[in-house]
Length: 329
Ligand SMILES: NC(=O)C[C@H](N)C(=O)O
Image (cartoon, rainbow, N blue to C red; front, side, top):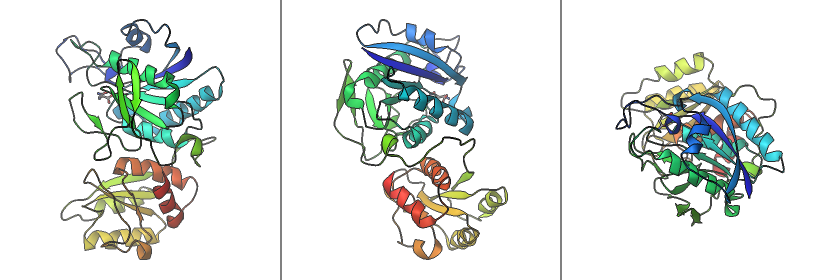
């Protein structure tokens, strides 16, 4: 029998409404983890569970402070020989960001699985209990070792680097566009078909020991007639890096190129990403990244590129070294 720790943070999986047909109007995070666990019945012969209620928030209120204390707690638990794996319950809106952050800072091969739900616990047929059951199964499964932080909802297994929420309201929302699921969980058995190939968890060079805040990095969204006002405001407010959700292959107007060239010359790291939602942002295409000291995101979404850039900035301000990290993680 495996010993699994569930760290609960809130979200719709812990949501409640007075009306059983409510699937989008409800209070997030109000149901304690012990009550949600009761809904899935016996876990005899599967796992011994310990629970910790870390916080009870809608995931829109997730913060760097909670990330750092959650990650430190997971590292401490996983260093104990009597803990075999971790499940984190989380709201779905920012679940992918927390999962990727943990993927970069957890120092263990033991399974870490994030799980949420799209329907509150009071819905006629909530998805939370089955999702939580699957997450426990996945965290207790020996084959989950060494695959980095994973995400499960709706019977699918996803890599934290590639997964994203693709639909605002439906249960079938977590997908890795183009790259696909790692596998499925069917009748209580995980089936893996793919492996994450990028560095994660036990291979990571990032450490959060002693860190009390992350360097400020903003994401800006590209569009027609972009003025660069927001980019300049971000730098004035203290941003040490900017991820630009650019057009197509991370493209930008002549105006934005001039704005970002000037900002990069001040030592602020500019990362070119894309607003498209899938595909690679390549170096030195229409834009001369070498000459401008720009970094590109590879296939990371802008919100995940922000996380990697924050952690990169805890180690270096050299754009070439940061680019290397974007190829590796
Ligand atoms: N489905 C959900 O969990 C959405 C909720 N607003 C949250 O992210 O906390």
